Image (cartoon, rainbow, N blue to C red; front, top):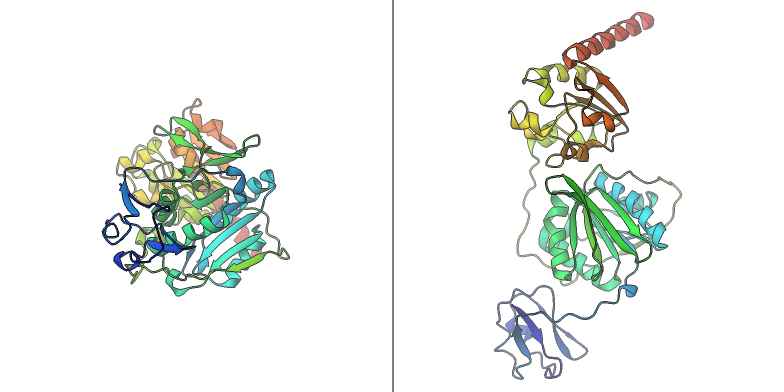
Length: 402
């Protein structure tokens, strides 16, 4: 059910304003309008002396002219005042899309400083909408969504991108729902249909067995969340200039308050998404003891240990190490896939790695199709040899320097 105002009957008497406990009614040009705060409590219906506020099964929406929407936006989330790395990845993707559309790229940043906004410009943003209001220092769904909805309605971008992070997954669906537009989650690729200017939003579907291309041709903005570590960062330009637009959070409040944010211990100890080298193991390890071998190799070369879902399901290693569609998406400089067959669900999470080294006994394993270097053999023979060689090289280095 929805609540709407019959503009023909409304006299702008403002009797309805005090009846709404959610500040969901605005007076514009002498007429009442229901805004995005409406919770359909129906309190305003009896307050209107003209019976201009009515209940309906279908919300009245205006015809959308896609030509009126211009520009690509990315939402730049921040943690403890620092812009998250996913924002720079989104700028890389957004820069490419905006260049294809011959339009501007903007970033939206809440709760961080102007210096952080300047960094976004250096990484490719033409404009940054910045709110430094203390209300946004700690993430909270309600005020974040209210302000982003307000900005989108005011400036009408045609594309809005956000990270498929806990923050993005939490509040971006609320924004899309309030704007009555589509949202594609967990995209791994984005393209532009140059004839229609539609955003081609590509993501795994049906358990990763197919790659679906999703369109939103009839609504704007086109919205998508993008998996972290899938998109490449753009070019950093220290001298790049752009515009910072300060945003006031007037009239925005929250019914809840975030008292404290607690980091999960596993996120501190296993930061796969920031690792330059990852050594992952799969079902081919045959037992949890195989991860001891991988840990030894990781310790020698400064890497982190990852895993496939199969190894996690077997109980050989904790979920915090899982790479893939239902785990973490990573993009290290070097990715070792040890005893991993290469199911599409795993490839989605690591195929953007700069160098992929696959070790598998099966020469027909799909992992070799994406590997930069492939070794067909028993990992329990190959990895000990690799460890031995690294130790020998280090001893030679010590002798030469000693």
